[in-house]
Image 1: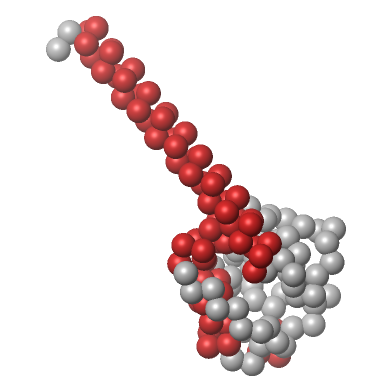
Image 2 (image 1 turned 30 degrees about the vertical axis):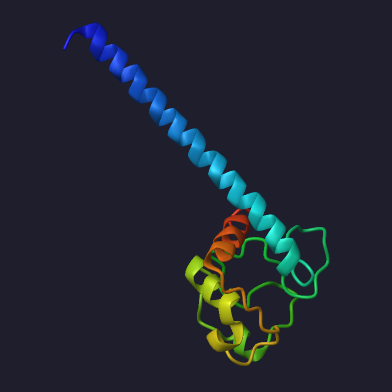
Length: 131
């Protein structure tokens, strides 16, 4: 293979890689936007997604990776306050699907978001809510 052909192949491969990265970033942006829309429809009436909004339930800012029952100044049920879990994507998915089945005795009404794609979108949005 000549140097020109090799260089052309390398430039072409780099273009494909950057196109794939751009497409991946664009898809993630779509997921986050869809997640925000679904969050607003399903979660926002009780949970704040920014520090200036009051909320009935605990704020979800910084939820991913946070220990359950640890938002200051929120009165959790005894069950949730003493729960030994960290809010991972898997735990949040189980909570969205059947919070009463996942952790009986909490104050939150049953959510029932069973569609995994909807869960994925909401999780993508929640991942953007950082302290």
